[in-house]
Image 1: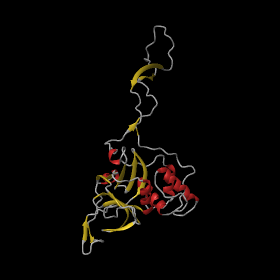
Image 2 (image 1 turned 45 degrees about the vertical axis):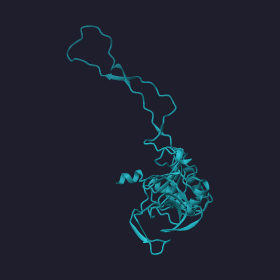
Image 3 (image 1 turned 120 degrees about the vertical axis):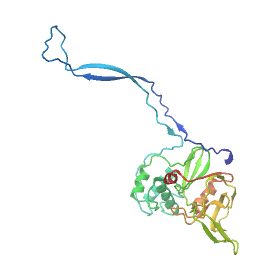
Image 4 (image 1 turned 30 degrees about the vertical axis):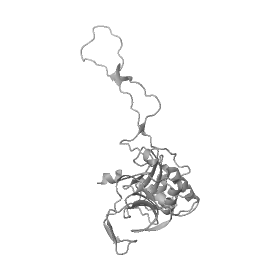
Length: 298
C-alpha cells in the first residue's frame, strides 16, 4: 500500500560514477631558472658549458580529483532531434512533434495528435513554469528552444518513496514513483486570500475561510468517482480529498497563478487520466510544500 512505502529523505540521494578513482600520486612540476653571472669577475677554473637555462624537477603531491555526485533521481534525455519548432498555438505536424517531446520530458498530454488543445496548452504552461519562462501556454521560439535543449526530466523535491507532490512555489503537481518524478501537471492552488461566500449546498449558510492549501504530509482519505458535482464553494470534477475539504480535482480553469479556495486544480482530462492510471488511490501520500523558489523569495 502507498502508506507503507513513503520515505522523505532530508538530503538528495547520490550515486558516484562507476569508473575507478585514481589514487593520489606525485605530480611532476618543471621549474626553470635563468643562468646567473657575476660581472667583471673572470672565471679561474674550467667549467662545462652552461646552457641558456637550467632545469630543476620538483616532485609534489596533490589530492586525487573528487568525482561529481549525481542525484539518483535524475533521468537523462537526449537533445531533441529534430528540434522542437515554435508553433504558437497552431495545429499540425510540428505540434505533434512538440507533444512527443513533452511526453518524453514527463509533461503529460492526452494525445499526440497534432491538436493544440487543452492538455497541450497545460503541458506547455507546466514546462514554462518549471523553467522560469513566461507562462502563457503558447509554444513560442524561446520555449521551443529550451524544450529542444533539455537534457533531463524535471523532478520534484522528493527523492524517495511513491507520492503526490504539490509544489506551491512552482504551481506544479509531481507524481513521484520510487523516488523518480514520473509526471508533471500544471496546477493552481489556494490564493491564500480570505473569503466569505454563500454555501452552494446549504441555503442561508456561508462558507468562510482563507483559501489555503495546507502544507504538510497528508494522504487521500476520500474520493468521488462520478463526474461533476456541486461542492460547497462551486462545481468540482472527480475529487480526491487529502486533508479536510481540500482535494485534487478537475476544473475548467487552471491559470498560471494560485486561484482556488484551497483545492488543487488540474484539467478535466488530467483528472480522468489520474483515475484511469490509479496514480492517486486511497491512502496515497500527498506532500504539499511552498517550494524552493517561493522560499527563496521570502
